[in-house]
Length: 92
Image 1 (cartoon, one colour):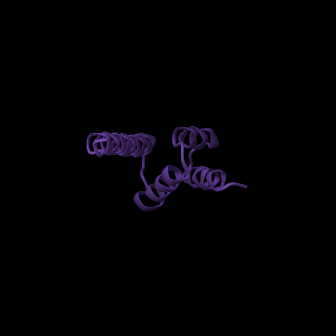
Image 2 (tube, rainbow, N blue to C red):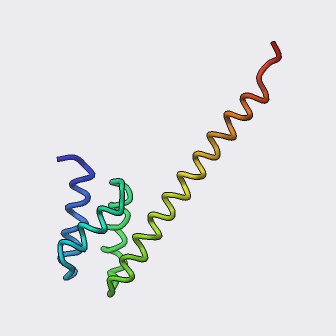
């Protein structure tokens, strides 16, 4: 079994122990596209022990937002690096 699937199964298991249906856990894991995001959500659930499903969804959205912001930052850094390489190339 791959690591992402194992992480997803653990997240679903934690949510089920908290009293939520399997389908809710499956939806959460479907929205979190990487093993790291799923593990971060699992850690949140185990430490914060949120009392309402809205809190769980809010954290899921925050994790997605952080990841998307990180991706945008890395793309901007890459683009900036390539532009600087082009501008600072030696004259031929």
